Image 1 (cartoon, rainbow, N blue to C red):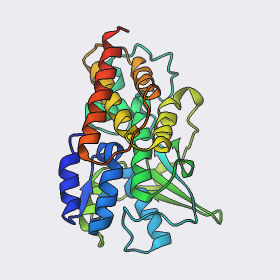
Image 2: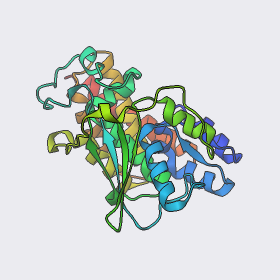
Image 3: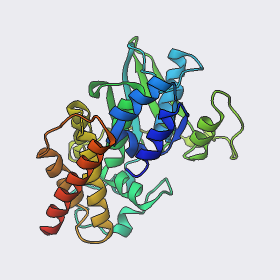
Length: 294
């Protein structure tokens, strides 16, 4: 959530932002997106999944399309892919007491600790669904996620006529970074092209109900609106930090986030102070639950 003031200041001045900080839109999309739309600032996603959706939507909207312009009405659904994180082949009960070291052993990506833990809980995908809601003007019923272990297909856009447009690329963050910085042009990226023949097959799996807790909480935050996203994000940040500090077991992360969100009644967000207040309340609530023990 620390990225919010800088992003809001930039879009208020009509400055385009290459956004790598999804929490900004999760917590305060209702402030940032209207401000960007009013000034003409573009929010260019530096996140592999959202960069993928963006490129897919260009096929429907034209090469000059950029968020936060809404997706056209004939987009039936946007599906984000999830690696599944370190525990994708295990049940939540099996990893309830997993160590931070185990959760940080991501099979595909090399990322910071907080994001890597979020991939293990699938909270990262829930946050990305909320971000997609704000970037592309998509309601919760037009958003979903699937497990895709190789992280080569980053997003799929299902059109009303049955067509599915997908974006593929090597699991390398330099690709979406170059896309955002060079837009509307394309320039060579500093890595080898993806080896299509070496892929072998593309595997997609449903997110089983036991692991859909984070996804369902994220979609509920979209539907609730107001400060629900800020509360969701803050509770998760507090719980993840407590896990990394070995204050709670892995299995408590989603329990704490669910408890904080479940007791929250959404209120409108009109100013950045509203976001900060919701953030502070959610962190305090989460800390009380954390302090209550494992």
